[in-house]
Length: 157
Image (cartoon, rainbow, N blue to C red):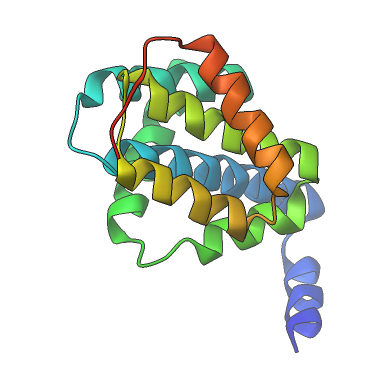
């Protein structure tokens, strides 16, 4: 049934528009996961928000207006989301293990941005890594790469 729906949509939506919609969905999924890390603790949000902006700017070629809109939509979507499955399912479908591991690394960069790692952030990271089917060794390596970029983080569990 899903394939017939996909075929139907392909006949009414030109492929170029579908590709753009898929790219926007990927950007939104990435933004939501980064924002969820920021929302996971009650500590300094400014440093984490700055890290999110830097990561999104580095990862996607967006204008300032597009970046602001993505952040606004990401925050709204994160507030309204009841689980992470729709975001991780999209990433699993569209990305390879290297790209998904890079997203985990970016999430760790956000977690470390405020120099405080909470138990909630740590739990969220493990949960998202599991949903993205990231092998434990890759997860640890991504965490180490993000940690090496920020040596001032205090871990509070």
